Amino acid sequence: MAKVLVVTSGKGGVGKTTTTAALGAALAQRGQNVVVVDFDVGLRNLDLVMGAERRVVFDLINVVQGVAKLPQALIRDKRLENLWLLPASQTRDKDALTDEGVGRVIDELRSRFDWILCDSPAGIERGATLAMRFADEAVIVTNPEVSSVRDSDRIIGMLDSKTVRAERGERVEKHILITRYDPARAARGEMLNIDDILEILATPLLGIIPESQDVLKASNVGSPVTLNNAESAPARAYIDASRRLMGEEVAMVVPAERKGFMDRLLGRRAA
Amino acid sequence: MDVRADPTRQLVRLRGRSYVAFVFSPVVPIVEWLAEIDATLARSPGYFVGKPIVLDLAAVDLSSAAIAHLVNSLNERSIRVLGIEGVEEARLATNMPPLLTGGRACVITRNEPAPKPEPEAKPKPTSLLLECPVRSGQSIVFMEGDVTVLGSVGSGAEIVAGGSIHIYGTLRGRAMAGVNGNGNARIYCQKIEAELLAIDGYYQTAEEIDVSLRNRPAQAWLQGDTMKITPLN
Image (cartoon, rainbow over all chains, first blue to last red):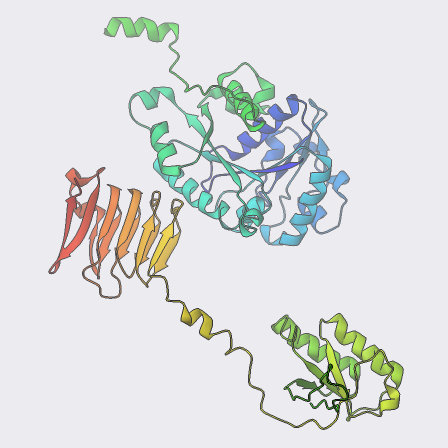
């Protein structure tokens, strides 16, 4: 059965697009048929992170408005043949999307794919509510800081009231994904700790992605971090998260500070 | 509407009884008249569902086929025609609603007042129980009495109650109790990290709440004009 999963957060810059690409690629590597859908109309990014920006012809709005057929707008990933992108329009705005139109497109995607990952725009306006509207599951991307956690709390409230599932009296399965977790800063007490975040949000944890240069490097070369360097710490954390999404039991690892040679040397001197 | 028949046998006794029905009086052009009906239905769908409807065709001159078509058109809109009046009986086929005569105009007493007494009969609930966390941005307003939350109240969420507020979790948002002027209302929570507490209009913001009270079970109540916040254990 196809699953529609929205990647959302409320706050901007927390890593929704990175997460959509990374989870999408990780699920595809596990043999699933995956499409990642960019809902950030007017400020699209997912095509860049997926490295498909030069192959965009038609977009989500064209399909919603019936200008293009779905197969014309879908872009197949160059690295994984079962990973697809449905890009957003950069020139239009979110008002061009309608409830019924998006519902139609999602229904059509459901018949073709195992996973439909919707990359939500930041905010709580139309674009964000449409991205979550038809979701069966939600990944709420949260940074370990107060403002991000409060925005996530707001988004969870909306997932529980504004989605089709909520209106039918059903539940959207929700997962918290903590991103940009910096073990060094956590050790110094400069970030909210994980238990506090989970206590505030009262929602199960899907994974903890450490802050890493690998994420930036991957998006600079237009590749999901899970494909660019599967051995990197963020990639492994995303792969674990994707396995949990598929129902596997994977032990949760809280990223610890890895001390380099210099750190150890300096550490010893300070002691 | 009248239905009369003489009792012929003891076993099947037929009695006459009159009822009130809505009377539709179509005018030409019928298409526009139907559009008018559609507009009414768009405003209140299901308004005519289950209501007895009589067609008064006195103002129009319709053939048998036209009458059948009209009855079908109404059927498609979930309007069931109970009888037809103002037309010669010969124009009505046997599968059409029967001809009615002797109708008297009357004031339609709306059906709406009938279901109304029911909810009134039940006493209004005086407490509201929420079994899930109250999220940031959500506002729970319950003027009729107490609010109980089994979970936390997030930062940026608010609870407004006519009575007391009970929170079995952490209160991080705002809680306003006794807003109808009930000075006896109290606020209880398992962990206090509130942004604002108010009872009957008297309030304290996060800054004014003593640090020593934070992160533990507490209650807030009014003593005269001052709000007291004390630990619960």
